Length: 410
Image (cartoon, rainbow, N blue to C red; front, side):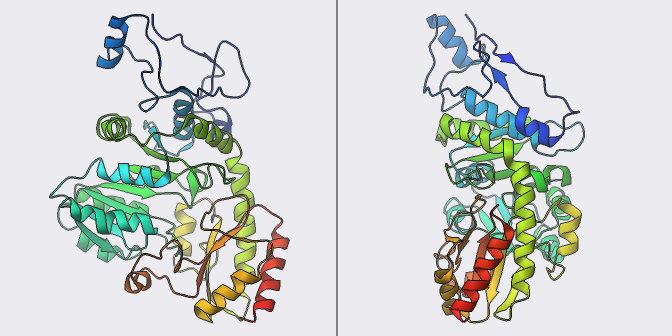
């Protein structure tokens, strides 16, 4: 016996636009013809004979054998995300889901690196990404080099010798630094490297790194893809050969598998991702413009502001400005804390991409374990706050910030 193919809805085609794929992509139905995707909460699968089990493990039969390897609900999430990720015309794309965003970053890097290899990365990175490259890689004999992301001359110098992998975040966490993906991709490929892009701030709705020349894209699906603070998840997208031959064995044998229940929640998140990103972007721009007008604020970093140093580049490679901004207060850490404690609507939280507006102090939370020198080198100061703007009424968010600034006396 082999697996009975599930019933399908309309077959996805290249004529479907991303908004439709986000709702319908990868949709399969069981014999019950359910409307919502089925949830397969199972760890294993059974076989009708010993021979069938053998053929399932040696690859003769293509079927489910263990949910650490593959699960129907997880596979639906992977297919849907792959269908909405922008790719060059005619190119194939595959997706592998993981238990968290950091599991995705770790797997995407370590599956292709070995002792003696070289990785070049942008300096402005999320704290855990920084740790993997700066602390973990050297333990395995991997050389690492950090580059100021917007400096193409620095990239050219760093990539003037053979390199295995290049890793960037754009926009970067939490500085909103923008990196020219196409230019860095060209330099990386000349050096023999794959370019891995963390696209979590932009989401697949606002930026398509693969279409700009990147080789691998990673997401913390915990953020905007879920978008409601419910679950953890991650994803790696690349060409099918990389996902099957390079990434696949690493995931299969190290086990950072996504829970089927989390995959089901993430499927629900994808259905509304485009709608939520429209509100996120509109609100974030409104909040950024308001904060830029306040005398207590030294600087607002948001790609949609003309004052952002890479505003023109962001307009060229992004389809929207995103939900995240950084605000630097003139009074340093004390002013930042007073503002945080005076907020009533916006919550203090180290998460981002949520429907609720959230704010954190990177110096003491997300990047706490980095040295002061490393934080300052990344552009993170004690007066910086990272604000993840939600989908509430934008005027209420402005009112909350206005009252908090007045009350805090910053």
